[in-house]
Length: 131
Image (tube, rainbow, N blue to C red):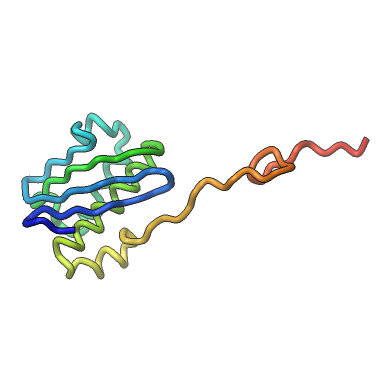
């Protein structure tokens, strides 16, 4: 969805949902009204969500505002990455090929497998005893 110079997209990963707004600016990233360094303490998570901006060399051009819900920190970082990539495509459709080939536009469909009846977990069984 586009509103003037503001581009909105939703990214998902596991149980996390990220609402991402991309607007012209100088590269500030705000997550749930907190700075990126304050929200994510692990460098891997920061690098993961800024990867689409670095790949397309747009990290100095856009400010990113994110509202993210659910899941853990790594899932949230993946959801933000997905949302940022989708918003970049809305901002400049020519970036689609670059982002698609890097795998940033593909939704990671892996989720937690459900527990099965008669078993201890999704795949783990109770200990077998012959006697």
